[in-house]
Image (cartoon, rainbow, N blue to C red; front, side, top):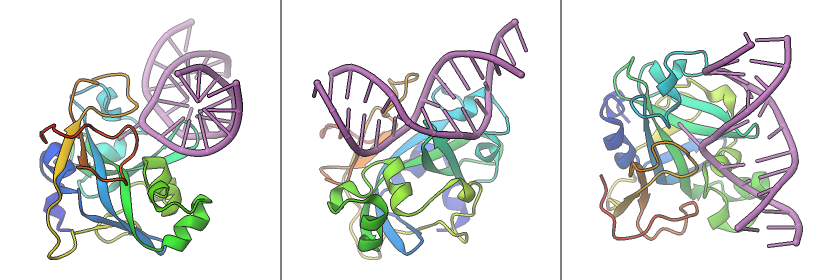
Length: 194
DNA sequence: CATGGGATTGACT
DNA sequence: GTCAATCCCATGC
């Protein structure tokens, strides 16, 4: 992925990341679900401005923003838009491609649909942690690569974001239509991508 | 310095 | 359907 890929409107990055691959620690998967966050709306951590926690969000695009959620889970984001804006794409679900047995061992599960069908789940399956915060997604340990050459661009549905209490009206969640690797609740088919 | 609230998940009724 | 686990950090006194 060229660095300019992330230096664009966060909604475009969120949609275009669908189908791209995430690789780390001997396992990889294709992105099937994302959400966009932008400092202009209150659900985004960057909405509070520049703090110790949000500094990566305002940094250069193409880096990781990894934070701890509910004291337990590490959630992976791709910092987007120009440096100083404060926007990122949350990677919410993957279709497992490589390292299935490693993922099963790390997750303590066997069902392939349960390995990466949620932002906390995929971090556990790929061993992504807070130490990857601010890492370079093109050249660092955790990498995001392009869609498999020759593969078709999947049909995408858009819907409201999950698990937030503010700005719930924005349809900034994107997912592969009909994919069983998407987290619950799955977005309703029929919606158009934004 | 004390407190409250999550961009979640899994177990349970 | 309900609910607890668990910790970083933003906020307020």
